[in-house]
Image (tube, rainbow, N blue to C red; front, top):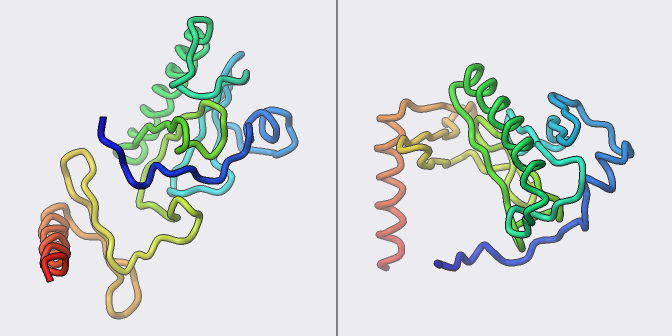
Length: 176
């Protein structure tokens, strides 16, 4: 399995969701709830649509699942699938993600459902929108800041050409 340089430990909370959200210490805007699952809007979103789906009992991550956890995970995925359908209907698509190990910011299984252009980096700092392009489901999306300072969204064709230009410039810089 390939190792990624960004997979270094990041600051973590032992279990933010049990300690703060499920205990009621932190108020959240609930979107869906079942006997074993809670879904809510992220309190500090990284995307315009950023939903968190958690089991109501502690499960560390997908990597630590035990057979007794499977019914709760099934319920978790059922809620996540319903929310993905709703977000896709409203926004045209979304991503479902989960982290394990050193990539977790909290040691509690959770899924993120997110859609839209990223607002903040992993460290919480605002995304530098002056140059941004990425591949998503086989199509490239891009946003740049025009000389007048307003964001300009590009069509997928324009974004592909822009991404190729960025890659070419980066390759040329690396070869120097």
